[in-house]
Image 1 (cartoon, rainbow, N blue to C red):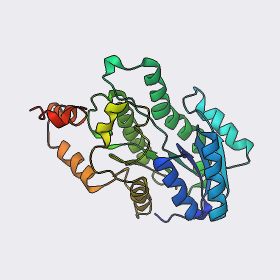
Image 2 (spheres, rainbow, N blue to C red; image 1 turned 180 degrees about the vertical axis):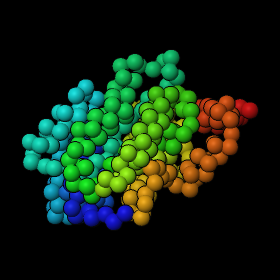
Image 3 (cartoon, one colour; image 1 turned 180 degrees about the horizontal axis):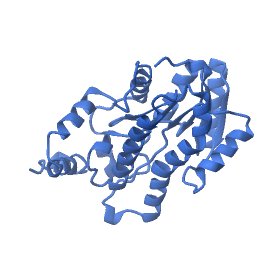
Length: 273
């Protein structure tokens, strides 16, 4: 599709670091106005000021906890109070828990579901009328290659990303012909702060070669700019190959392989057959 970035006002969640920060920089460089949403107020304000000065675009910073129950209506009001009309949305904010499900903190799991699942659904619904009215924007939901696999020790995170993938593919179908494009981008292991606060065992998630946030954003925007973007794009050839191979194996075999991949002690243990 032909994307007029200069006509866009993009609401971006999880904007203060990692993939979110890379999206913000890439879109500002292309001339888009931004509404940046994250919890870290000071970091968000500093980033917004720098982007506005560097690229001469309007950047609003809204510190916000996306685990709140009325996230859609409250954030829509906060945006409206600033006199902003949103034309596009990137649901990027998410966090995970790395532990056997039986040992996980249930309050943290509830917050994880709220941020990773409920917030994208509510925000998409809250801003859909504005975006459909503009009829030239996009909804990009950041899913994960975990959406395609079982995720032992990250069972809830993997399930939330499977939800995001399915939700987005359905949106893609419903929105065809409206002028509003929706798709999911699915990164694999990426060099971000994602594992911060998940404990030392989570280092196993970053033990291989990592993609960069800029790689993920380049993949997403290149897909957006295709003549007819599909409902999903997977970042990185290795990740694409992994998803293809998973489709050739049984669910049992996939689960056993991922048990090995997510095992903090896997360097000393062979993969299960």
